[in-house]
Image 1 (cartoon, each protein chain N blue to C red):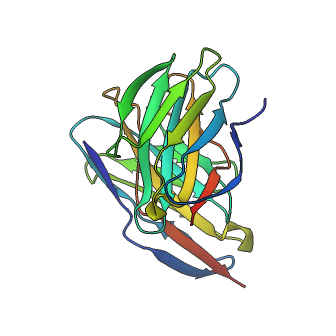
Image 2 (cartoon, one colour; image 1 turned 90 degrees about the horizontal axis):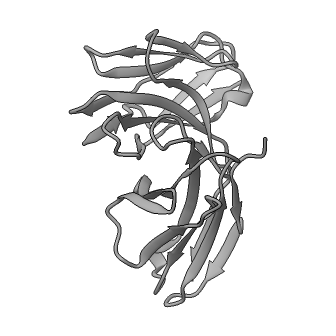
Length: 112
Length: 114
């Protein structure tokens, strides 16, 4: 069974631009969640989607948004990028959202 | 709401020595507990989990953790470490209240020396 796939692996953007990251969950998994990892703040929850509905959202500004498609693939978007948005963005999938989650390799976003 | 505290930011240990990585949590609801491992430039790999049942859980590579409800702890142990165990280890909790999110500790870097 293929694992969680995140694309792209690396990304360099300029301040003020927007970016879209993609996540394909494990086949059969309907819950997709996103996390931001930085050296200063550690791992922080962004949001979680299940059957195309956002069920929970972390404490991030509205510039961070996401969506989930009918095939459970998910995207997250960050608009008006700031230097502080530089981070490793991790996507995780699980069968129903509660319990164990399986992570992708992450997308390393650098904002210059 | 939940929170997780990993008391040690870095644990240096010699190869073949035992190790314990400490994790304490707080929660107003019952929780699921996890340990994840992260190697450089990689995502998180699930090491082991406590969902219910036996409070002692084991992984396939020799790690074990014990859920202690009274002390709200979920410490990770290994009787004999290898160089290849050098990595960052994260303890995480998820509430059984359908909050659908993992709360992570700040991580412990395990550094195994020859």
